[in-house]
Length: 334
Image: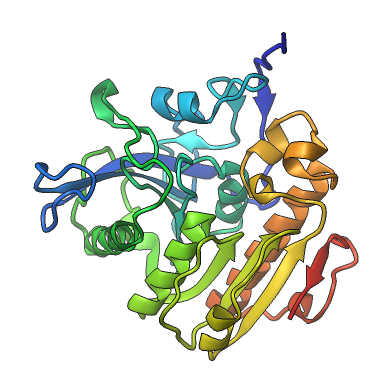
């Protein structure tokens, strides 16, 4: 019988800021829920991650429903140490670029915390979305909305979820309370919605590509091992395809994008390598590929941040011109 790991910690973020986090329930009264026909509204749970100025309390990792969904025989996700604080004060002084994250089918919104904490520690505000009924979602008061989607994500609903979040962020930036939850003062004042990015993993990668096509406010996007990718539409805004070793990008999808674009692969990885399984599970080449977890996390964090720094902060980099010496497992496909 495999023994369950009872206590592990995610890798420390590499930036100077301590990530703050707050959970928020959002309701879109303008559309019914696609998975529950008799529910005349769509409700979501999101996490808002931001550079903090102190205070708050140590953050929990996943809620009960989310942890039960993602835990394995050898990993208990109710006992993971984070580097974030819940409800901390907001670090003021400058406007922050904002990133929206969409997870894979069946994955909780905060199952990429290693990547999100790192981005936040470098000055980004990141909003992670649970696509309700595609995974178990923990709502306030202990209510858990179980998974109803079996094998396929609802792309239309997912893109509308992203647009709902953008609308709520606009309300927050204008000083209104966008949903149910206790927000720290001044959070809306640090949002720079002129510098919006989006990224997603698996089905969330397809969500990223389609959301960018439909919404010009999204200025740059990263597809992490995206599948499936939408078969129609294109645009001229920057997009990075960062995939596992076996990832395949349809030629038609690549050809439709007219602006800055790169396709990279991380050798010795699988689709699960972009989740928190990579740093948390015992190293298992069959599940996660032969490349060591530390190298995968460093490579993914480095390229994700460099892309958004380049396109949302205008920070020059030569990283996408060829391989980086400290990340030799990343290869530029085109």
